[in-house]
Length: 269
Ligand SMILES: Nc1ncnc2c1ncn2[C@@H]1O[C@H](COP(=O)(O)OP(=O)(O)OP(=O)(O)O)[C@@H](O)[C@H]1O
Image (cartoon, rainbow, N blue to C red; front, side, top):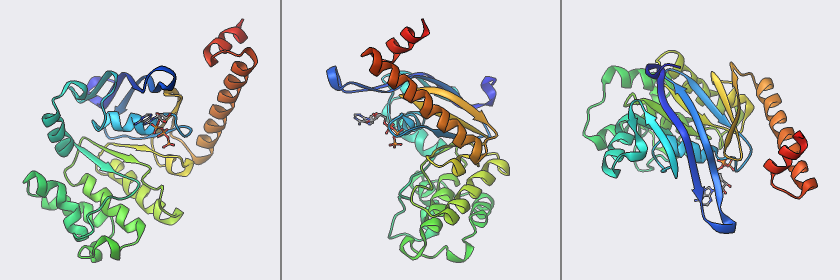
């Protein structure tokens, strides 16, 4: 991928927690490009580092080592104040728990990031986004008067209203039933296909991942494989293979009494 086609790039990103016997490498040298106008899903077993990677890419967390480039800006060296502005102006977030402000209407929630930045919404784009989430008749409702799926669509609109470089979504359908999930994923998919937005989404769900153009698979903080034009079936197969590979490594380590890497070396010859 040429530099101009990349929205965000991870270069040898490490994230280490703790020290001594409790040390954990949540990310162990992850390098990946996330293309502009592309929808990428990140998958992997629990504890594999998905959220940590998303948070590092979004400038919500600082890697222990390595670089994160948003366009040509290295987030890892940016002073905190500039990072705050960059997150506000160039990045959108969708969280599993919606995180809407309960006292504001749906429309006020959508425009909140712009209001906080003292910017006026682009009315055409706002109308497009509002129309696309299919909630034109509920814009004056408070979050408590909306279903979970409707609240999450409001959160997606809020993430997109500033036309960010990238929308990062962390398990956006984790709290939703399959129908509401479909509505939210359709919306994210259309924002990429029709409006050239860039979405990076962490998910456990093969069906959710099938809405993406590409799926990256993490295990033990390492990028293991990727799948282009995924279907729910091909994602499930890739996850089974990942599980089987992990089991083989664990079994090798158990038999030799060593670390998985030692075991792999020993098995290899
Ligand atoms: N603040 C922290 N302090 C110590 N260890 C942490 C911290 N945050 C994450 N970890 C560890 O880093 C590893 C990766 O965590 P992460 O939350 O990124 O995984 P995940 O793939 O998103 O998991 P899940 O699917 O369960 O949400 C795990 O072993 C986790 O226990």
